[in-house]
Every structure is written in C-alpha cells, then in structure tokens.
Image 1 (cartoon, rainbow, N blue to C red):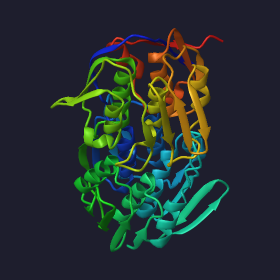
Image 2 (image 1 turned 90 degrees about the vertical axis):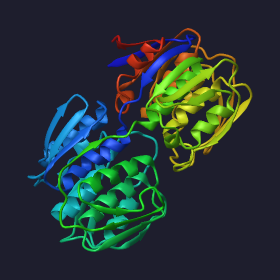
Image 3 (image 1 turned 60 degrees about the vertical axis):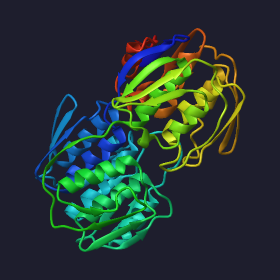
Length: 419
C-alpha cells in the first residue's frame, strides 16, 4: 500500500489549480442512467470514487468512455437493475443509482451502501420519499429492492436536508408522472450543478438553490454536455494548507460563495484571504488564533472540512471548540492528531482543542477520506517527519494531492509501504 511522507515546517508559495468536484460529478454521472443520448462530462477528477462509479455504470449497461478528465456516457441500452455489493461496499454514493434506475426502468436493486466509517448515514429519507411517489420498497439480505410501474409526483418534506437524498429524489422525479415538490432540501452547490446538468438534458426543475425544489416530470431526457464545478472541499483544503503552513498561495478556481462560513472562520484565525478574478489568495504571517466552529448543512461550515480545520485548531493560540452536527462518528482522526502532540478532548459531538506551539511528526493512520486530508495538513505544520498510512482513503476524493502540494514547496511524497 502507499503512504504519504511529509517533512513539516516549510511555508507554501505559488499557484495551485482546483480540480472538478467529486461530490458534483458523482450524481451527474449517475444521472446518465435517466435516458439515452450521449452525455459529455468535462472537468471530472480522476479519483477512486469516480472510477468506481464508472465501473458501476458500465455494469448496469452504460457505455462509458474516459479520456483524461472527460467522461462520455450513453445509457441508451441500460437493462440491468442491480448495483451489487462488491462495488457499492466501497462507496456510499452508489445509492445515487437507486432513483434513476427506478424511475427509468421501473425497478432497482441496490446494495445498502458502504464507504467511510463516519456514522450510519441512513438512507431512510431516500426510501421514504420514493415510497411517497408510489414505489414499493423492500430491504432484505443487504439490498434495497424498489418497484414502481411509474413514479407519481408528490409533495415530500424531508426531515433533514440530506444531500444524496435530495439528489436521488430530484433524479427520480425527472421522469415521474406529474409534479413533485421537495421541501426542506439540501442547498449545496453540488445540487445546483446536478440540476443544471439535468436541465440541459430536458428536465424541468425550479427552485434549485432554495429549500424548496419543484420538478415537473417529462417523458424522456436527451444527451447534453456539461463542465463540472470546481471542488469546494479541495479548494477549502488548499486554503487551510496555506493557513497552517504559512506563506503566500493563490488557489485558482476557488469560489468563495461555495465555502459558506468557512471563509469567515479562516479569517477569524488571522489568515488574510483576498478574492480575485482567478481565485483566492491565502497569506499568513502571524500566529493562528483559536476559533469556535459548528458543522452545519450549506451554507454552514462543511462537515467535509472539519478534520482539516481541527488540524489548524491544534496549532492555534488559545482554546478552540469544534462541534460536529452532521455525522456522529467523524472524530476518528482525533487519536491520530493526539499522536502528533495535539491536545484534544472529545465530549460527544464536541471537541475542545488547546493549541500547541508545534506538532511533532509521527506515524499515523487515516480512518476516512477527509481525516486523511486533515493528517496531511497536520504534517505540513509538524516538526520532523510524518508518515500517513492507508492513504487509499485520500485517493477516493483527492487527485494527486501530494503533487499539487509539492508544486507549492511542501516536502511531501508518496512512497510504498515497507512490509
């Protein structure tokens, strides 16, 4: 297996380009299942989760061609209704095949999803919404089996603004009979990107970006060309890299509106952020300052940047508090940060972080995708050498992160683990 090895203490300087958004590309690729016609998707990051989605779509009968960061899809001859455990177990986003298969073919059999060990992330809200649209649903032997001759429009009020649940129901409603209104939905920018792609294909969607989305069902969708939005989590990770290491970094493609309250919190820590036509410039000369953060649905602080933020808190002056409200199991990185000298006490959904002058390099292990990025940032600020194992988690969502950091002057490299 690969490891990431970092020698900390080097400030970052230069420009870095943000790639396409993994969390936008995943539902967009899944949406190819909704109809025939060629769909050309550009700016798709080459990360493991998207490779897995491509394999799943091909297994279902989609013609998939990948050339660099472009993926060409044609679902004209999709016949299979089953997303098997062997693929779904590695990626929770595989559940996004459920809505499109059901509304297109009248039946879907999707394995209960796997992925990062950061909480239950139940799919009950997906199933409740589909049932309200007329689906008959059984969950047995580890699979969701849904049937519906044709879904019918309905009013659906979500108990929680689930992102994948919102996306699944939007896609299902595109080919449903009548009008579907979704209330209390998620408002993440990735959902707007999905809706933009679906609209290009002929879907009738209104209210994207608000907490109420209305979809008028149509008979069929056609092909379209789409450019995936920049990855706001990658952008936020680079903002924090510049903040924790110091220096002067230009993050090209960073859209501040996509980062919600993260932008403000980083400024509160004493980091200078300057918006420009190309992106955001990050500069820090003095000591990071403590801050209080609570993860919330967009436009609140993203849970996908919580681990990275805790790395910054670990070296900030004073006592910071992190409150995680989205996933109950997302503090698995805390013991690894503690191995590096971080002073963190966890009490339920709260983590109290007492800043230290410097972390110490150590051998650590990634527990999930975003935790691995948090450990990389901690390594940039630590004294000595940090070695991060199980970086296949990192590869699920970041494309060549270590190479991009090298361009900025970080002493980081990917190495093969010594047996």
